[in-house]
Image (cartoon, rainbow, N blue to C red; front, top):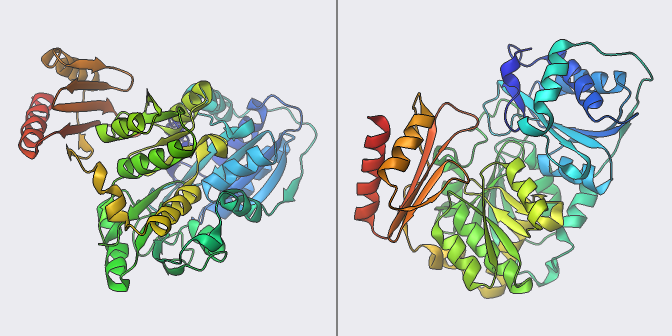
Length: 445
């Protein structure tokens, strides 16, 4: 077991060199002990990776040897695991997954009661120390119970929609041979939509493309299929189903912040004066839309554990990230991909406006997208930027964001990679190009 598998948001590494059955066993024991509860009840789900069944066996052995009772929910997208923990009111949960990473990776996403995430700051470091030490007392052994929870999850998601009133659409869905294929098939059985499901068969080698939809190279198949079928929209899932990317009827990727702005507008129409949490990387159009719709803007850090903590603390109704994560208070402050999907479908049906038309009003500014720069001394680089642009409005909630009247930028250290992530937005294309070049030059010099 390598200590580097313990990350800021989860536990993840290459199988079997970095993460293996021994690691799974001791992580299971450490996690059960960390919960500090006699005989805790813990939900365990898994994705479709080749190493997931073996890691499931070792993890559950560790959990039960430490006295925990395991609720085995089988193949599971991560939002389903979160739902199981909160809905069943149990003590914690683990989903065995490496999300969007290549097939040689695997890992564990951990939550405590109410699906509250366990991150580096809130428990992963403690679990790491106990797992690496490997010393545990023997006692009462726990048991494993199987539980089917998908039907409850589908019912929970669809209760807000009158499916009979939604006009049937033509939809292309790409689940990249990942575990989301199961949920997608079951959800859309309940509807009259014509669904073309790409790469639906579970295959942990991901033979068609990596399950990382925020990278456009992995969207070639779905874009082509949307155009070929003359579909109303496309939806691409990542490897563990907690992230979705939309494709409009023209076969173009729709940015996550445009979907966030659309969702904020729809949610605030029914829930005026509520707070919306905004991603520091997202377009200014998100904040402008929230204010115009009568909502209150709260700015927050990137990363699901920070987002969920802030949403709970401030009682925030909704948040959307640039990379396709969408969180709802009504979904236990967790990712709610299927609610967002059906809300977008409902809006297309109700208005008769295609997806490209729904997001067109938000296409107001010129945006760089996330630029990854390999920089050794990230702290010094950020201080240099702050000094150079001190005349702007400075915000340090996540890295460095500096706003000017006609442009802004955000630079922040990645929690998962040795890079500095840069985002620039401007009112004109010329200004965007100029400022992006200037910032890149300063950071590299």
